[in-house]
Image (cartoon, rainbow, N blue to C red):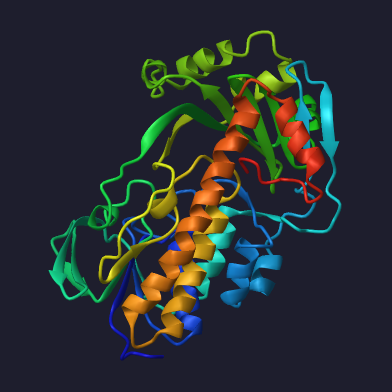
Length: 385
């Protein structure tokens, strides 16, 4: 392990930050990851992800974790279907077994990354409350407990509301007028057979202009649902999500007249509904070179859910690690090379993500999305996945 390399501080133990730490480790470079959560198991890690050949799988290969990744794939989950509001099947695409974009649980993916790192790489319970430049590319992080660390390279892998971003950019996330409301059904085959049949083996999209119900079948006989609504922030604020029954009834009312096997994904949820208001950074977000600091993942290019976010975060992490390894004596050259590739890549995916959201909830829904699926031989299975 190269302990003479300048101290690298990564803020955020999500998939991007952990991939960066792992690929650095593969290249003999040590780093520390600072995470606000108290432990690896302090909260659930979200649902299923489709991991793409061109970025997420490449990052895992760079991390030397392809075999571990293959071991956690949810077989058969690449299937997808599109229904109308009455439950009629408009498009059905079974899993063809090619595993171009295999599905895995986010928590399982995070676990294999954590298990691949040396002990003490991730520092838990380290919530960043302040950051300042010390000059010469060095930065000081202050944590909630009053402790501090100094870095010669600081990487913000700390998501949508990144504290590190302010060192580089004045941009802040803005609500785009769409909210996803999350809930789960457990023991679906036994307790909700009609709904389980409607969802099928993988992803199900039931969409109309301005609203829809999207569900994924996950390992363990679980149906994970996102109810998608184009609504102003004031409308969402008017729902008391601390009252699960009232919130469920209010959301379900938006789908009056829809097939009961679809609305059961809302009304029969085994978890309280959680509103996920969709925010993005401005299109084309980029920054001038600031010595000793950069961003990856949502901290750099927050965009609408499209199935690409986790893949891009991991790819960012792997590409940054390889740039650092390629310029061991020149951090600024490494960061310049990384950012010169990052900005156009992010901008292209940002545009695609907005287009996919419009296909799902815009005036052409659901037929624009069906056209996308029919026109892509690989099947954009990751749309909002």
